[in-house]
Length: 355
Image 1 (cartoon, helix red, strand yellow):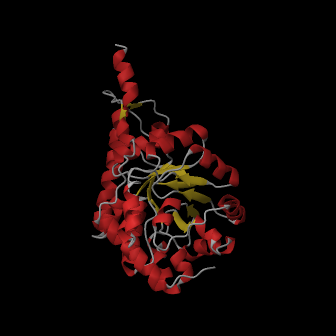
Image 2 (tube, helix red, strand yellow):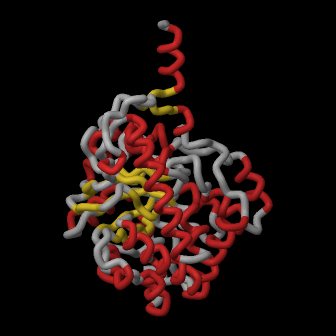
Image 3 (spheres, helix red, strand yellow):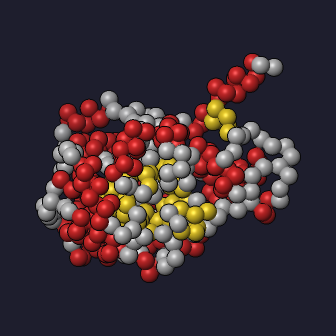
């Protein structure tokens, strides 16, 4: 196993946080969710008080269908952010993803920046490790150790090939990862999933991952943070800085990734994330096939302020989602998942032309 010096990890993680907070790092592509609109029900025939966000994911009951997307860890500032996010997630019933736990494996000093179970005893916590590390000395043992360190309910292996080739210290060997992912799935007693980091997953890749034994997929589609842009701001190579501009619109938009995977895998657990900032967008993602919806950068910004700011943002997202459900006359997440009241702009044009 190749060990990175803790100070190098801390420096990289600190730079990631600062860049995400203070630089323009959005993908030029949109999520595609703006291409969809709910068909308003003027007579919803339900009481708003009865609209419930309760759901289940991987057999666990949850108060909401929301996830704090995997973001950070490995620095003192990241520890404070993760603590605030965990306290808020516990209060509101959101699941919580952690940033890559690799730093915790390579430094006991950094391990504490990921340990949030004491602040979030009841919600699902998802540990996170780069899948490419399986080509750089990591084995099933390290994956299981990640889960143990943070007392996680699930493990997600992130695939970030495009980020790695732009990252100054990136790991670029992505050969033969699928059988290694399969080994991790077979050895783990808890669910193992795979997530992208902002460029989406296509339906064929999703099918291969399911055949390898993964328990869930987070599409992490294009439309939000571009990690090519993040690494551009860290790079000291003029060539890569210029090349990054050619990839400002790279990836599969979140809506397309969700819709195509759901068509291929009708009943498989899916997380929709990537560029989602409010509860109406979240409701659209659920109607397109997401079982959980992840929010990232908006929560990161709130967590730099206070727990109260994070809770307030979560409450707003929940209200927006419930309001959207009420507006189409559905009272449950199951009803939202099955709705036929989400129309694409193309469908709306067809309907108008038939009048």
